[in-house]
Amino acid sequence: MKFKTTEKSVRLIESENTLVIEFPLGEKKPSIKKQVEEMFNVKVAKIRIHSKANRKIAYIRLKKENPAIDVATKVGII
Image 1 (cartoon, rainbow, N blue to C red):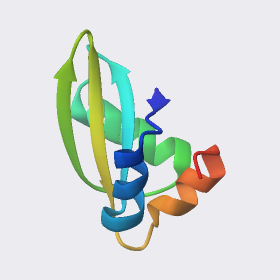
Image 2: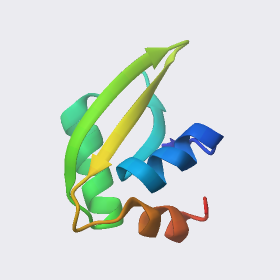
Image 3: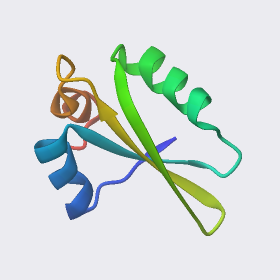
C-alpha cells in the first residue's frame, strides 16, 4: 500500500473526501476495503479501481463522518 501524493490526489482529499492509494495488481475491492477500514479506523463509502502498468490505483471515498484529510495528516501526506 502506497499513498499517491500528486496534486490531483491532494485535491481529491480536500474536495471529495477521497484517498488515492496504490496497491499490487492482485488486490480485490473487498480486501482493499477491509485493509483501509482496519488500518485507519474509518468507514469506506465507495471504491473505484484503475489498473495500470502492474499496479492498481484505488480511489477510496470515505463516509462523511470520517474526513480523509485527518487520515492524510496522520500518514503525513498533508
